Image 1 (spheres, helix red, strand yellow):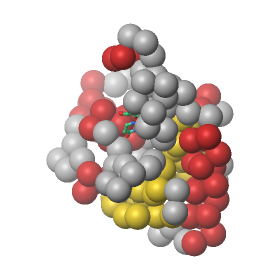
Image 2 (cartoon, rainbow, N blue to C red):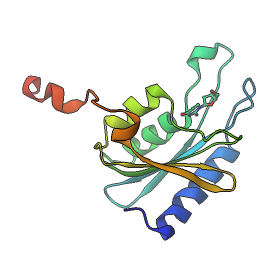
Image 3 (cartoon, rainbow, N blue to C red):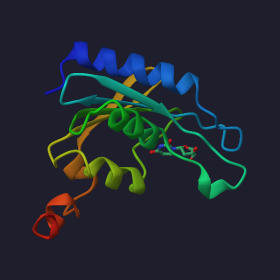
Length: 139
Ligand code: THU
């Protein structure tokens, strides 16, 4: 359950991150904010590259910030983009989120006016492959 106070905190973090986006090629700026198991919020923005495939999504930056800070489990995600079509996480980012979150993970999609849609990760990435598939192989 993502209450309105948390929505506001995530939105503010994602909005501020989006302001820092480096998107000279697409001009499509994205910010992402994650709530971890310790109650901390981590943000990221997209960082494009002249060698286009080397660019990274906002979600990837936010996940790197979370891991660096010691966070290991996701409690909520908000992605903030722009345009008429809601900026849902790309396929690769859905898998990246899956590494740290369950099917029930709330994924909110926002634009500059506010939250446009709410999903769970399981809705966005059904029947997913995750760390549990490898647990019998782990030491
Ligand atoms: N982008 C993200 O940052 N997150 C997504 O989930 C969708 C796409 C970025 C990547 C690229 O810099 C720009 O949006 C256009 O695809």
